[in-house]
Amino acid sequence: MNDAKNGAELTKESRPSILSPRNAEDAKTIREIQHDPRVQVFDTMSTQIREFLKITNPSLQMSESLMEDKVNSYYIEKNLDPDEVGNWIFYPWRRTLIRVLEEEEFICVRTARNKFKITPEEQKILSKKKIGVIGLSVGQSVALSLAMERCFGELRIADFDTLDLSNVNRIRTGLYNLGIEKTVLVAREIAEIDPYLKVTLFNEGINEQNMHDFFTLGGLLDVLVEECDSLSIKISSRVKAKALGIPVLMDTSDRGMMDIERFDEHGDRPIFHGLLEKFGDESRLLDQLPERSREIMMSLLQYENLSDRVKLSFSEIGKTITTWPQLASSVLMGGAACCHYCRMILLNHPVESGRHYIDLEELINSHEGKS
Image 1 (cartoon, rainbow, N blue to C red):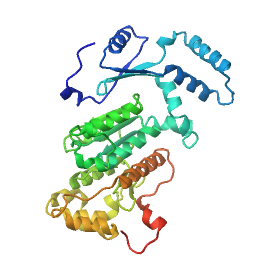
Image 2: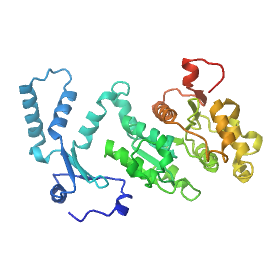
Image 3: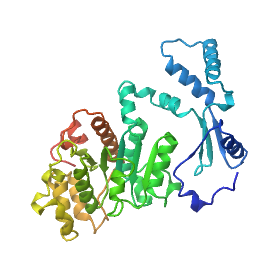
Image 4: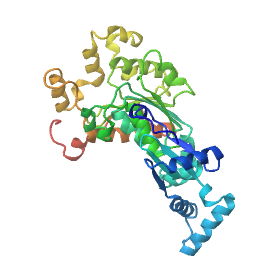
């Protein structure tokens, strides 16, 4: 095995190596990695095979002897020795080598507990879908929820920023990742859950030069989740999605507000539900930035509907805080909600355009006012 990559190189790694013991060159690489004292090796293949056999034979009461017979039959049917089964996944950023089932069997086991909230037929449909996520604070929770449910065949993630200490109040990650690109962090987390999922990174975020590729390269996006801070990208990404007939989802991490725009069903609907129509034609909204940025932002957020604490926070920006607050509880809930409605849209279940609130304080306490 080559010498371990230095720290600077490791921070750029976002994809694991998938190595087959049935391939001579891969087998040689696997042996070299296994003998590197700096690498942790995990091999639970026998347990995974047993779990696969239980899941694919749900009506059988598996005694130990019957399970042994099934395991032996498993190797015979594959015409492989036990050490040739599965794939080895090498995660260079963790210096870890893990043996897992081959892709089809891996997916079967990993999604077994999805049934029948997601049917096998629906899982196959989702495996061909392409989802884009812009902005990786709420977007990280969205991406991980989508990955855990296996709601996509390709996920495109875009963010130009690196992880700062202040991000850790809402982004689930370790302090050892400070300074690493958010796209890389999300791609790594997904790969550690499921190495067979495809994740495409746009490390510079979305800009005028790469936006078309983000939406179209390798096939048109089926859904866009927009969670960025940039007002210009919020506007331009919706104009693009509208032109291409792609639905857009956004969570604001306040009062559980889920914003859904079904440009796939109604291509003529105005962006942001017409909230910016008073500023003129949407194709020229960017010309009014940055002069009218605050006014436009207040309109699209519907300032009067924000919680009292977020309203207070807006008045403190530039005085006692630098930007609006986001809490982990709201971000995690928003990620789950975006995942849920993405799945519903992708499976052609009815989902209406509009702004929908899951306000936990009003739901339980029904106090006067919003705090």
